[in-house]
Amino acid sequence: MLAAVSDDDRFDPASLTKLMTAYIVFGALRDKKLDPNAAVPVSERAWKAEGSRMFIEPRKPVTVAELVKGMIIQSGNDATIALAEAVAGSEDTFAQLMNREAKRLGLKNSNFMNATGLPAKDHYASARDMATLALALIRDFPADYAAHYSQKEYAYNGIKQANRNRLLWMDTTVDGVKTGFTEAAGYCLVASAKRGDRRLVSVVMGAQSDALRVSENQKLLNFGFLAFDTQRLYKKGDTVGSPEIFKGTRSTIKLGFDRDVWLTLPRERFTGLKAQLETQQPFLAPYSVGQKAGIMKLTRDNAPVAEIPVVALEDVPVAGFLSRGWDTIRLFFR
Image (cartoon, rainbow, N blue to C red):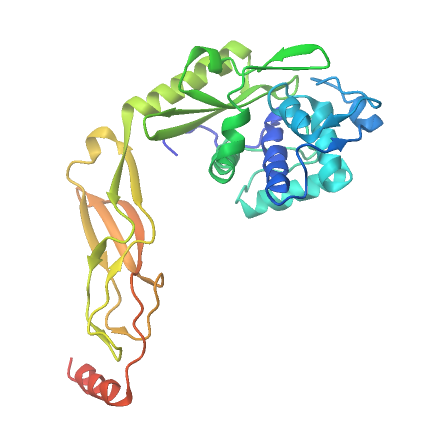
């Protein structure tokens, strides 16, 4: 989180809710529980949905793929309900899936009562949660995200509707993600932009106008890209220490990271960074690859900056009886 105000406050999310609906639908498509080419029956509940609509009809076949476009690009509440019913049988049951996923993703200030974001008691979300959800959507379903969220318009049933995310026209680096509006929620927008290898997500909720939600998101994105930098400090598998290990088949154990380590800081604050590896010695076998073995502490001017878990990069099985006995003696005099 580079900058935030009231990021854990609970707001009416309006159609930002559809980010969670899309997350679950993409999961169902990935797991083959939904067929993108399958026709979906349109219930009376979906057909008569209030608010923004895709204009589906009960007697006209509509596919899952068309409904996904209608939900994401047109923000159709009718399409959203039809998808929720296709996944879970009813929108109420689908809302239970939404809350289960919210808990799994660590969304601590969000609760969903429906799939659309139409106003409902106990339906809320925080800006932090919406940012977390958007990042999860991009991370877990990159192909689906790329195929839908940057689309500027979609036509169905002879009606062409434009994506309400006006940043798609104003900033070529923006490729998503979702707008929302109700009288209760005000104007909301989650936006994402990728410039070079860096991606940022911004969230504005409860703005007084469409123009304000657009301009404030643009300011946040520009600030993030201009004032901050992201650098890779360590590569996955880099060895940062080889301490002695006892009672194992090796005399030392290689320590490092199980992933690339990236750090985002104000641009000028990378200078003067110091790293210190902290471990609890002595190391005793057995150890397995990926087992936590310490912490790399990053500081600047004696102030903490970040703590990164360090893991074993190799297996060290337990040695034979004689070697273990010898190491026991060595440890006694250590």
